[in-house]
Image (tube, rainbow, N blue to C red; front, side, top):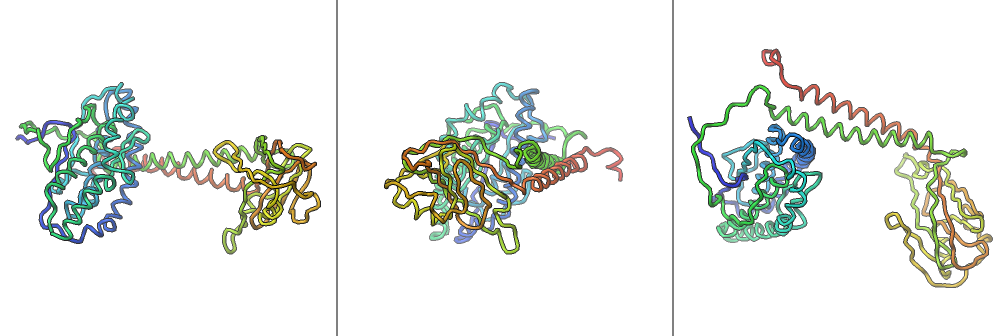
Amino acid sequence: MTTTVTTGYPVHVHARLDPGLSRWLWLVKWFLAIPHYVVLAFLWLGFAVVSVVAFFAILFTGRYPRALFDFNVGVLRWSWRVAYYAYGALATDRYPPFSLGAEPDYPATLDIAYPERLSRGLVLVKWWLLAIPHYLVVGFFLGGGSYVAYQTGQTVYSSGGGLIGLVAFFAGIALLFTGRYPQGLFDFVLGMDRWALRVAAYAGLMTDTYPPFRFDSGGDEPGTATIEQLPPPAPDDRSWPSGRIASVVVGIILLITGGGIGVVGLTGLWADSTQRDAAGFLSTTSESFRGSGYALEFGTVELHWTGEGRLFAGDWLGQVRVKADDDVFIGIGRTDDVNRYLSNVEHDEVSTAGSRAAYRHRDGGAPADPAVQTFWAASGTGEVTWRAQQGSWSAVVLNADRSRVVDTHLVVAAEAPALRPLAIGLAIGGGVVFLLGLVVILTFGRPRREHDSLT
């Protein structure tokens, strides 16, 4: 018995324009496709994990594990069907199936020939370096809302933005007023989708054949031929069913998530146990600040109740201690009072820009004596300790003699009493999620044994 297959570029994208498309249904397809978008969000997370595993498999063995290949092809198929139904083409009103399979009777199909061998060298560069020219082209097709981008070694394909989305929108307008999908627009949008899917497969490590810089428009790919060949041999007992693949992917995601949460929790416990000073404070490193005015004003901190009957945000900080050089005055007060005090004073507003401080200079004159002001919640020379309270707060640093150019070093510390219970909760929660991942892999991802199939 023989079957017919298509030869040519390893990525085969076919589609047919459905007759009798609804004039108005395309207006609500964004809503109808929401269930698919939710599922695809998790599938693409699995795609990312599988692609990283496949990267190392190809690097060390020269082979893309067949089960992982089939899963990622399934994710691309699912994405292509949803894009074809929605705003990547709007060329069918048939709702996409929730399936990773080929679904040959659906109006949009995708097949990728399985490569028996892949280059170990190309896997290092093709997904980020060699594909750059195609990224520029496909980025124009897909625009900012949807993209083909390499992230952790995988390519994410979506459609509905950029030029593709614009052409599909024009087709929708034509449908609304004429009841017909213009054939020219259909051919054009399918050509762009086909180009994007070829690049997605190449950057997703599924083929070593470089995508052609060719706009193959229309539902059927030109320049292909059919040959008669024997059907592929039936998979042996070692092949992985889709359920087992999905279980392994979910298990790996749980392992990674749980491990990350657990590491954060253990790091918090380590800091709580070893990094506190004799007074029980956790400190930042010493930072240098220099302003050309009479004072440095540090940005507003908002501390409020997190909800009725809930913890006050300041309870997570406990007491806050600020240390500076001995010859500077430090004051902490409500933001409104601080603004009034500095309204006519030459000073510098300090904010953080990444790892460096940014300064915004304000003109004015000399300040009144800060030591006699009554609005400070806490103040002192060289060091101040403040109990966090509800409201908007700002800190001010001035030279003790009220001279211009404030140049000092600051160290901020806090008791952070909530750190230990929070770290314990994260460590326990991360461990539970990690163990759940192991259970999923060992229970649902294990191969079926002979006695399992007989029961």
